[in-house]
Every structure is written in C-alpha cells, then in structure tokens.
Length: 211
Image 1 (cartoon, helix red, strand yellow):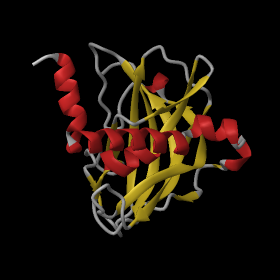
Image 2 (cartoon, rainbow, N blue to C red):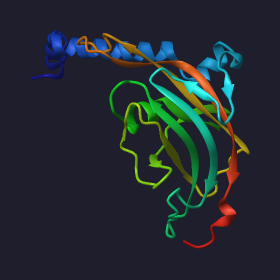
Image 3 (cartoon, helix red, strand yellow):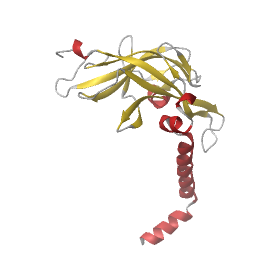
C-alpha cells in the first residue's frame, strides 16, 4: 500500500481523527493557560503574587507551605556521588493533599510546584527530580489526604551551576472538574499560574568535603 493510500485511510479512521482533535485541543489549552513566563509577560508580575517562607499557598488541590531552601553537594539523605559530583537544590515544603484521595508526588506536586530558573534571559519551569520525606529521607510515593507531609523537593544540578542568593518557585492552580477528560471522567485540571515562592537559598556546599 502506498503512503498516500495509508494517509487517506488514516484520515477516514474516526478514532485517529478523534485522537488528532484531542492533540490539537491539548495544544490550544496549553497555549491558553500559559506558564509563568507568559503570565508575567502578558498580565504583569503583579498579577502573580510572591510569597515568602512560611506563607500558606492554596493551589486548589494542595495547601503548600514553603519552609526553607538550600544547595549542597549531598542530597537530603547525606549521600554524595564521588564519581560524578553534582550539587543539589532542595526546597522543603509542607504539603496538604486536598483532593480527597491519595495521589503520587510525581503527579500534582511535580507538575504544580516548579523551580523558576533563568537561562539565557528566559524563564524556565523545571520539575523536581525526586521527593523525599524530611523526617526519614525515604522517597515519597503517595501523598495522602488529611496527612500533611514535609517533603524535600530535590533538583540535581551541574556542579558548576550558579544560583542566585534568592530563588523562586512557581505554584500552578488546579481545579476540580466533573468532566475532566474526553470520556467525561471527573478529575483535577491544571489551570493558570497561581503564585510564586521566593526563598533565600542557604549555601551548604562548604560543609561537605568527602563522601
């Protein structure tokens, strides 16, 4: 079968047409929502309020309290890589899951709380690499409703990466929708930029010499 015939058959396939429509809609929704770069450019930075450490930010799906931030040559658990040295940026937050059901930290939290990094003059939204409990440093899998958890959000950076004395993180709002999917299922849908968190980043690199 020629490529032209295959393309014609694909176009006539209703399931493929629906999938293509969903892809287009997803792009349109993403463009309408925009990120922090778009929010500050089109509505002005004053429209996205900045909160200090200790302030409670309600994102809809979560209540988030940023506690402190630091950079180190060890992860929160105390381990360093002697063969491929990196530095770690850590944001410690208290997270209260308000969705009514348990969900993965690699879902709402990773998508809705991002580090705002600047590269070549452009704002970038960088997701955390991993999540660890602040008390025992075990990896966080599920965040349960009604059980606020203190989480160390960890970003792995090149050893030579420069960081400002104060860094910013962005919080995205998420709203419950009774019809969140194409098939009518309910769920929590990500919305617009809701707030910024600005915290001084403590430099702990000098405290680590050997693994």
